Length: 413
Image (cartoon, rainbow, N blue to C red):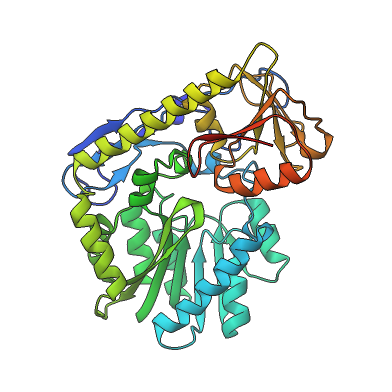
């Protein structure tokens, strides 16, 4: 990709205000899931700084990369490979029917990936399901499940095509993609057009409160353009005749929420939603002081991590990364690991054999790696740290295990 293709946004993604300010400076970083085919292959690094709107409080990144670059053939994420996510989406599908008040008949999932959520909705309700996703590998995986999936990005043009073909939906979802779209105004306007009156828009997003309170830097990468709070999001949705009435808190990715908004019909706010609004108001999540708290939390994580690492390494130590995760590139830069990594362990055959860009650190299969007493293993698939530790302990790995989540600590095997 040509670095000149980077676009810097000058206005808030939600309220279109030009009153946005840079709050947290992060290191220039290679794009997630981009790796080299040979050692020291050059990779351009891009900004990931965090901005906040001084008018509506929305937290966002403003340096925008082309979507066809972010979601190219390198995009390897497939939720159907994760048993926990399968259980999660089955439970979520049930909640859709409860909040809708009847079985959904026609469902659209924007950013449907390999069709897992649509599969759950279809199996539970015998609903007609349609997915929209730009990634070729995801579309092929969904079609193997007989889930109709359009290989494209959702926009106002596609919404007009649905209307022209008399295709309206009583349920539309956008799970962990509502935060990926730069033009949320057009995106939301389009989905509201094709959602029936009384229908429900549901969405799962990483929750800003968890990101800040827990210092979840691993949730920040170039495709995550927005970090949502309920206060700013609620104001935004109302503009498009979408009325937030309930949320579910889920523990995926360190803390997320599933929101439910009704089209046209205003429902009473659930007790859960009222409590979360009150919490956000108390924390002042829409104020710059909340970003100061986030900045201080990140600095504390980095300093604690580096102090522990420096106290436990010597000239013979090998620094081993476990997990070529989407969060790995920023974590490597943030924790200043790029020049000391020996190798990266991963089970994904699509990544094995590749190299960290601008480095000779190779991604190797976990079953071909021999550990030593002097290894320090750092799980950058951070959300799975406990499972990784238990697995490696069972497999008699040696050395030490240095985690950043749920807290920064070093453990012996």
